[in-house]
Image (cartoon, rainbow, N blue to C red; front, side, top):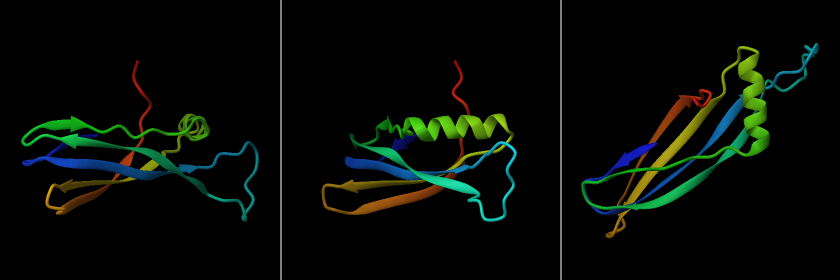
Length: 105
């Protein structure tokens, strides 16, 4: 995720991902429809007028379940919060929702 600031600040990204559950041959009414996993966030300083990239990472188990869901035609969705705090302590934040895609090689 790319972040830009017009003044020097510390940018932080965090979030969670909702992965649809896929079970072979089971369609029980009480089964959970999705699992939620926290994303490993990142914090980086940004110089005034510069752009930096913040990477959010999934744990291995979440990656495996997301790949399985995508193979079955389901889409994992992430909820991400990015915030920036300047030297005076002023904070600005933005929230967004994104669909996860497989990494291209």
